[in-house]
Length: 425
Image 1: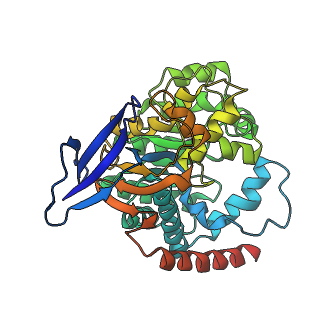
Image 2: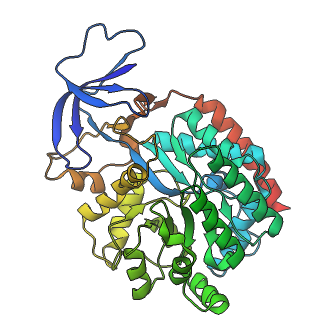
Image 3: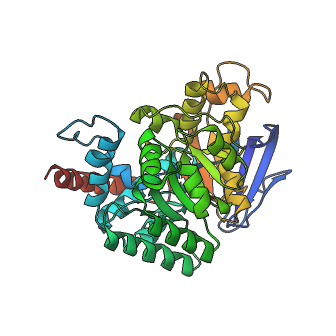
């Protein structure tokens, strides 16, 4: 089935070269993208034509680290006792929330997240999930919800010792079952300071068995380094290196704020990736990301704060001006490196036929030379007009086509109220 984009201004996501003309896309993981000289008057059964006159068309966005399970937390009442530090924020807010999730709330959270991703032009998400009291079937439920909206997802289930042996055993089984079935999945861990040696070893062994990788928080706050050193006599990246976490090109270390020079050198010499989440770091007051001493294998995520990758890129640039002085080109590269991670590691669903159509009425001249300035200083999610995922139109003229948005939001609001009541008990 073909989709034609008539009179598009196509911006190559790698070179930023502008090409004006008509595009034809084919659906599916292997569907391509090509320029055509004309759009047929009768494009054929099932084919669609999208008028892109005056609009920009470029590669859709992807998220390198998300927490879909946090979707129903937006606007919830604050904890009874205000958190004094990051550890208390985990204990009073996020660990309380993830324990309150049941299978229906897991599904609704994933639907809410996928819906917002589609609206923001994000067509692929690397997700990090936690629901210790609703483990069985959670990964398939998340994948199903994202597929229903039309957004690709690479899920994992956060493993941790903080909820006891039974929960970690269920998590290992859930992860192993999905990997054994040949479905895309990573082996998730919370962070070094909540993962004991036995669980860490078993997680690495599971990743090695299925040629996968680990998706783990690393040195987000000083408590991770302090507790790891107190219990294991080494720093976080050193511990992960010794355990084999960094052996895999599919491994993602999230945050990486409190790293010393030696840890950065270890990471640089490994095939592992780092996911930067600037807004979450600002919100939690844990520090600012610095790419100094790391390789180019740094990509951007949202850490569950929202689903707008343009916003994440802008936050990474403006908040990183002082600590690392990264320019627009570097931050744009981090925005786009999620595609490289997925492609290099053989994950399907994030091909060239994933596109976003931007209705951006530029108030000043717009060209190849200043596109990044417009992207960082002028564009935002309100300019996302239409979205194409795997060659299929999932948002058209700012309307989601794949699900009934009003019905989904009614369900998620009711679910949020039920969750909030449970948290207040």
